[in-house]
Image (tube, rainbow, N blue to C red; front, side, top):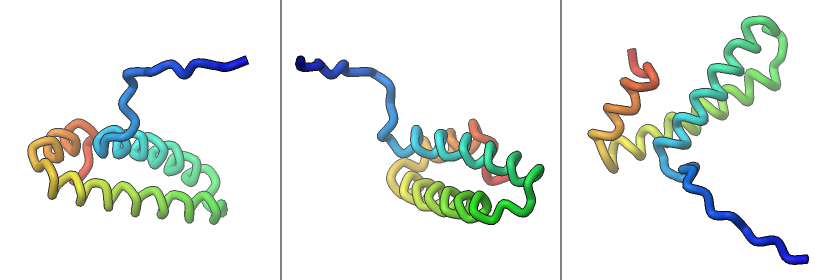
Length: 79
């Protein structure tokens, strides 16, 4: 019983895709913390995600500034 791995065209590895996914998770955790302000583990997880997104944004800005500017405008970051 061997299973063949299907190749998908979904982009999950590029910095812009990772930043988009992290932003969605950050928004969900932010909403959760508004209702559950004493959930300190969720708060720590949020800080970890924000730090990871910050590093990826810094990398993307250095690597491809045009794509960086398009992404922050699309996601509504850096107001």
